[in-house]
Length: 622
Image (cartoon, rainbow, N blue to C red; front, side, top):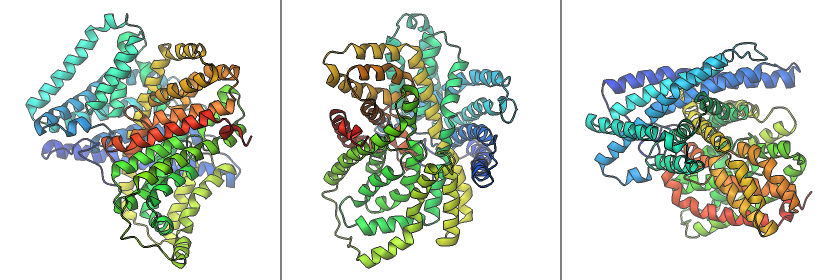
């Protein structure tokens, strides 16, 4: 799990020579501060928990300092991911090409990355310069200390993109790739005056044509989204370009997302300390003799821990490292694993405490307690649907080499695994009892895992900490950059007037409540594929919930339909950001999970239809 992935979902490893040695030296110079930022954020958040809960003297500046460190971590982590070739991308088409043509397309991908980074570098500098005039409320320092992470990260990524471009192919192919990207950019620039007259057709041109074309051409997902958004706003609107960087900053700076790197690190700790092996040994002993047993465990584990961190990426990062190694050892295909992981992310969107449900309550006035109560059963229904697909797909699994464990052995395995199995419940209890926030709770998990590794399992390899911290930074940076550019894309859609037009059209639908719910499901599946859950709710919740009330649809029922539909879109490729986060966490190339995920997503769509058709599933326990 710690080794970088090359040649599939990631960029290929660079060649030898002076450029490779220069890249390695510069990579180390960036990786060390990125790793230290992970440690610093853990320390700051843990200090905040201790000061508030133990000493009863809250540190008013801890969240602010953590936010500053977090943006630097996100940007330097993105730089490390560029250096290590770990930005997620689609390589299904590239894999079928001849070596010479694939080398050319690799050069095109690097050239596109470099083009986006160069285009956004000056707006990032302007944005950071403007932020210098703002003083932070707690630390009372210039916000420039935080904002300059953006231009610094962009410039460093551009440097590594250039180094990798020069090593990606022969000089003639590199020149051809650069010329191709330059010609496309010039063509769009010259077409700018005409594009401004196209109106909403520009949404199809940029957010479907450009974004989709870039994704399938093997350009990293974050850069593909960024190129589409930059092109749309720069060529078809009069929006100042620093606004794009501001929206990226907004998307990457939600403090709740700080749980992503911390849970990634927690997942690596669970594996390194032996907790994962103890947990998997018990679960395998209990269900290992059942066809698809560990897949059922994955579904159930995601249901148990979902929502603890407020981020699906963080939830998946806490589960995948514990289960994937054993599942692979038993012969599970990596594409099947990441497909099921992504499907469980969509399935558990309504499990409390859910940040999306909290957002719905805050913008629509619906009782958050009612939403939490109503969210449990719909997620369980979708879990049953997923288990049915698992049962079908595993019906031919060969268990001839697997023996059922006697109950005495299972009891001994349970005793050994109890400290590891207790971790999700400790984390949930800490949130429920107010000991730590959803962001801070991962630090308690890290402390618990360290102590368990040192004192209980007696397995703690100090030499692995450095590489684990660097891997945490790289993986987190790759995920957060995708979220940042996707947030900028969402803002562009909002400014186009698309959201208000959609609400008006849905209010005028014939067929009453059933048609409204059916169209809501389809609409939010599409919206979920291009918007994060929270921005989509903020944009469309105040517009659509009143329409649902007029048609007699319960607020809680409609909330479940909306959230589950968005989750389905969020984890559905080729545009669903959640799917690529699952691939990054599982260290699996995106194209490997494309075929397996179709069946899971169709099953989840059936489950969402059942939830929409049976209001009692959402309101029966209110």
